[in-house]
Length: 231
Image 1 (tube, rainbow, N blue to C red):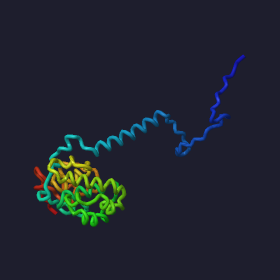
Image 2: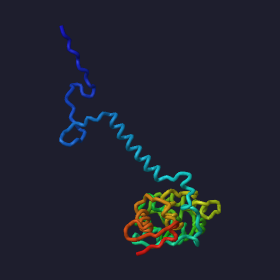
Image 3: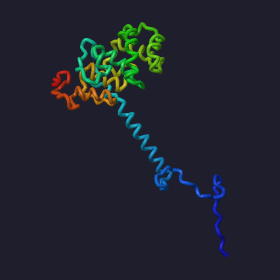
C-alpha cells in the first residue's frame, strides 16, 4: 500500500491556491531571482553610495593640498569671467564670500541663494561684521532657504574661525567640505588644475577655466595663475 505525502499548507494560503506573479515583470515572465540575488543588488547599491560619498570626501592628505592653502583677500586670484555666471564668480574678490555662498548652496538652488544674497551681504558684508551680528538676524535673512538656524550658526562659527590666524588651509575651517574647498581653489587660489570638482555647475566653470569646454585654449605650464586664456 502506497501512502501519499500530504502537502504542507501555507498558513497565509491555506487552500494552496496559485499565487499570482506581482513582480511587475513584462509579458508575465516570472522573476526567478531569489532572496540572495535581491540582497546582492542591495549590497551593490550600498557600495555605489559609499563610493560616491567617499569621492565627495577629502582624505587627510588632500585637505593639506596647496590648492586649499590660505590666501588673503588682496592676494586672491582674479578668475576670468565666463558665460556661466556662477555666484562665486561675482564675489571672488572676497574669499570669505565665496565660501559663504557655497555653504548656502547646500541643499538649495542657485536661484534661491541669489535672492537672499543682497540682504545677507548688506547685513554681513564681511567676516568681521558677521561676528557682531546676532544669529537671529542672520536667520531671518536666510529663512527662505530652510535650515536657517543651522546655517546661521554655521556662518557665525565659520566667520570667527576665518578671522583667526590659526588656520593654514581652508579645509580646517568649520563647515567647509570638498565642494567649498574646490570652489576656493578655483576662484580664490587660482589652482583649478589641482582639483576635480563634482558639482555640475562648478564643473562647467572648471572646464571653462581649464580650457576643456572647447571654447578656450589653456596654455598653462605650471600654475593656472599664469594661464593665458585665448578667446
